[in-house]
Length: 113
Image (cartoon, rainbow, N blue to C red; front, top):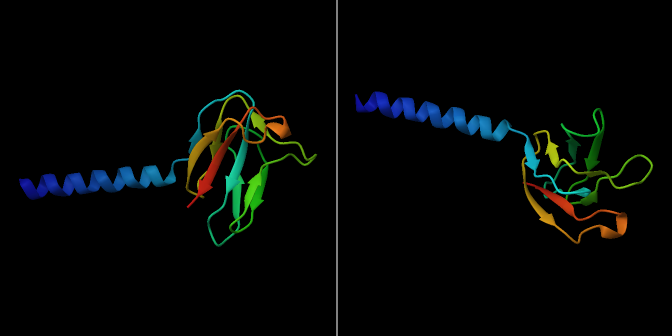
C-alpha cells in the first residue's frame, strides 16, 4: 500500500512541477507600470505578452537589460499587470521609481534565469 501511495505522490509532484514550469510569468496590476526585462541568459530571449500588445514581441539580447517600447519608441505601460508567455522563465519585482522619466509610474522588472 505504501509503495502505491508513494508512486501516486511522485506522479502528482511531477505533474505539478510541469504545470509550474509551463505557466506564464505574471506581474500584478499597478497603475501605468512599464515593463523591463533583465536577460541573464547567454542567448537572446523573445518576449511575448499574453495580456497586452497582441501579436507583438521583443527580442532581448544576452545579458541585456531592456525597457520594452513600442515601434514609435514609447515605453509600453499597463494598468492591468503583465503576463509573459513562457519560455523564458523568470522572477518579478516592482520598482516604483524606475523609468519615471519615460512617463511610467514605476516598472515591473522581469529577470530571466
